[in-house]
Image 1 (cartoon, rainbow, N blue to C red):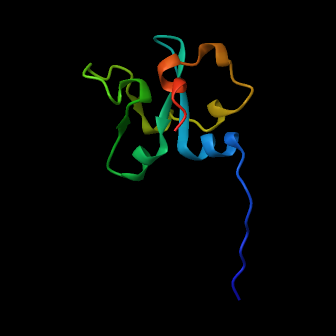
Image 2: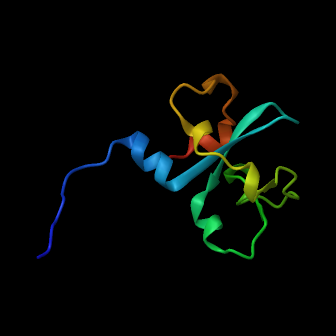
Image 3: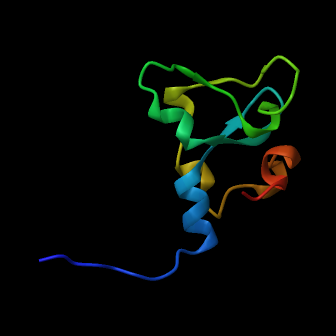
Length: 90
C-alpha cells in the first residue's frame, strides 16, 4: 500500500529545508548557508551565500557544529540579516 501526501509548503518551510542560518558574531549578521553543503560528511567548514559567487576569500566560514536550524526561526532578529545572503530567494 502506497500512501501519498500532497499539498503546498509554506515559504518558511522551504527556507528551513534549503538553508541553515548562523549568527556570525564578528560582523553581527545572520548569514544563510545552503544545507546541500551539509551532505558531504567529510566537509567540516561551510561558507554563506554572500560569498558563493564572489572572488573574495570566504572569511565567514562556519564549522558544522555552528550551524543551527533554530536561528532560521521567524522570531530571529531580522534586522541583522545579511542583505546579500537574504536578498535572492531561490
